[in-house]
Image (cartoon, rainbow, N blue to C red; front, top):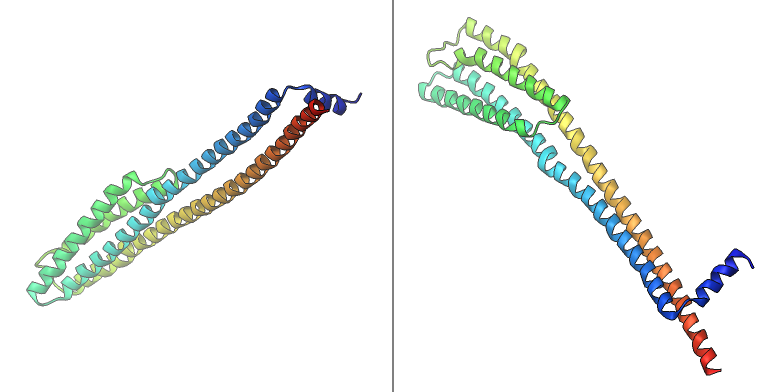
Length: 230
């Protein structure tokens, strides 16, 4: 007797109760495996999605807000210098002060978003460059500043030496975070696709195994009934 024949005979010799419990047991195990795998995969997708929504996208948005505030700060500062109307000059200078406060607030709050590595490096560089640029531009916000050659030279020096480089830093910083967000988005989509495929495969296997077991058990029951009727 071959091993296969011995297996078939052992199955035939089982009681109906044992066959039913065994069949349902196999189906339940496959169902449990399907559930565990899906929970694990969904947990991975959820974790990546939380990273994207809670860190990647807010980081990009906050850096963009710093960029806009820095542009407005510098343009308001320069416009305040050339403005001859005292009231308009005061408004421009007040706008620059508010922009500086917004940059300070954004940089402070970014500390909880900074990721280890290059993101943190860019963050500290932005803090340092902003502190130097703001201190250097402080004389330009004085109500007594004059639109003369010395002032124009200082504006040119700060524009090329401080504010333009800082805008370049912010652009590189934003590009880094956009790249990270795009990568995490692709990973999330890939994980979801893999989870869906695996779930379909396991579901098909569970259905096929269930049908096979149902067929074998029903045939065994029929065979026993046929013996009794004979």
